[in-house]
Image (tube, rainbow, N blue to C red; front, side):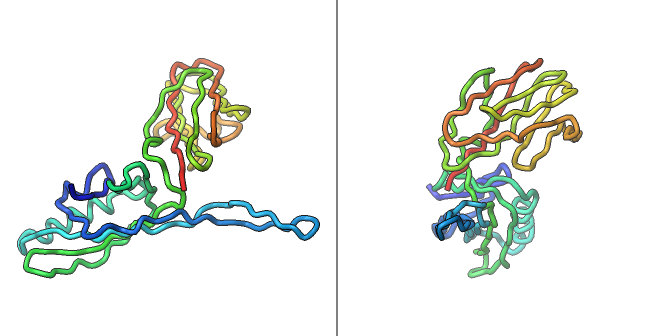
Length: 233
């Protein structure tokens, strides 16, 4: 079976694209900071991740009269939405969050065979694909971060009134909840649909450290869904 990428809710094979050669799988690039301490010793801390490029070489067949239509369809698929997750079929357990896309010029090596390359500039920390789906949790439940780095989840809370939500010893409070509210710790936003609820929120943005985390809450909450976004190197 030919390999493919999954991006913007579609497989590259659905567009009749062929990955010409197995790409180089990028490794996470960690940013470090060195701190001097007493006695001439130093400490090294992780302060973030550098962006990583992920390049694919594609080919497809197109008769001269259909070439521009096919090219437009491919460009629309790739450029329609930035910020989605990219999954490569030969590394299906890992997802990459795309920040930028660069499409090289298309070349033709026969009357109908077209070639082009795409470079996805991705966030430096990778994601575990199974952590990108929401999980429904009960009050007092535990959730295990078995990734290699703390994660910044998306929490959707259904309920009403004033609620307090806790992960371990860290918590936040949201007032005036009506039906539901979402808290996204990656982009540090609290919202309901297009309405900003940041003024109604106080406390810590939710973080899931490595290992077991106890989830609890108080207030009139009927359901909680967490998209954990497990991260890995």
